[in-house]
Amino acid sequence: LRAALLKRKREQRGSLAMIKCILVVNNQGKARLLRFYNDVPMDRQKHILQSIYRLVSTRVDENCCCFVEDESLFGPDHKIIYRHFATLYFIFVADSAESELGVLDLIQVFVQVLDSCFENVCELDLIYHFDRVNYILDEIVMAGMVLETN
Image 1 (cartoon, one colour):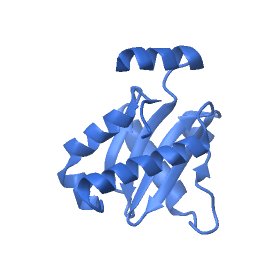
Image 2: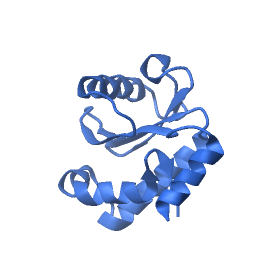
Image 3: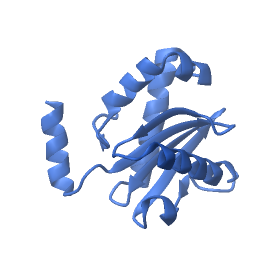
């Protein structure tokens, strides 16, 4: 059923994965969750992580929106959408066909599900229960396509 749903969504949009990667990074820049939906070499993943962390961590939460663009990382039609919760940055990189507000809602849903699963999620939950966190993410996003937001 999921494979059919994913195939139908791809046909409707006429392109490959809409979400390119999902990063959860702490305030010191250490990755707590790293998911790329296309083949990216490890050294490039490290460069992307450092560059995106540098972009989002230097922005002031009160004065800046949650959207950033950096053409040098993924090209001109991609955007970085993030939310900062306590000690963690939840960062999604999506192409221009994806709605920024839709991705912000997706981040909110992901964090709420983690909160309900771990009773007020913290960084240690992501470290010690990485298998459950990955399972939850797989239920929401598959191959870069959003499956469920409820």
